[in-house]
Length: 248
Figure 1 (tube, rainbow, N blue to C red):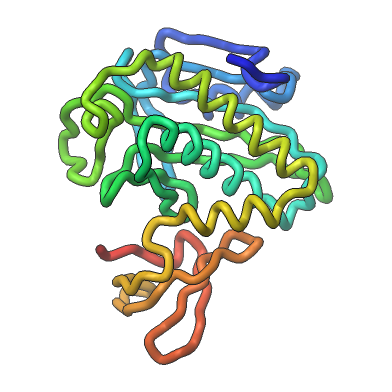
Figure 2: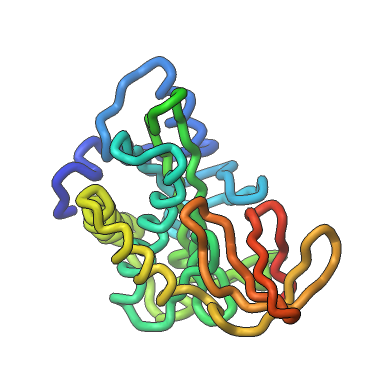
């Protein structure tokens, strides 16, 4: 991969329960350089948003974790990392063909199906953003998904198989580009690109909050990561990921 620091320390496993768990546990007792990548050919018990599990078989799916050390960011701006990672995935996949979108907060969709997901686990001191362990799962060469009707792979979209580690290389390159953009103070540019790439932004759709369905339009994402929705009564309301469900 053609990078300055991401992936220069590259740890590869044939099989591991979770790349995120492995890296998070070892950070408490061992030092790793920023940009460390932990890759598993076969992940047994990966983690996703809302406590979901995610598994990856050798040669079919890409699962890896990446260590970032965003000391330059205030703790209150931690969501900036989600924007970087989602945009980087969006960048790399749209090089293959157009049509990939970011579903808030950082899933990647093609049309109405999920091709990739991200889980970011943060380590923070009282005043410093110490580490961000970024776990990425991408469906690459699968042709079937049991009990996952909204899942799709690159092979299903494009009709060809991909070498998983070559896909990883390109994603690391686009992550580094977006991260360096953030580090150089270009948040507004990143935010603008993020909103332009968002799945179903400004479209009327169905949600549920506190077990109550409602109709609204996504109009923005706040700096703290909360989703801003324009309600039918003309008011605006914002939600955390655990407070809202997409119904359709």
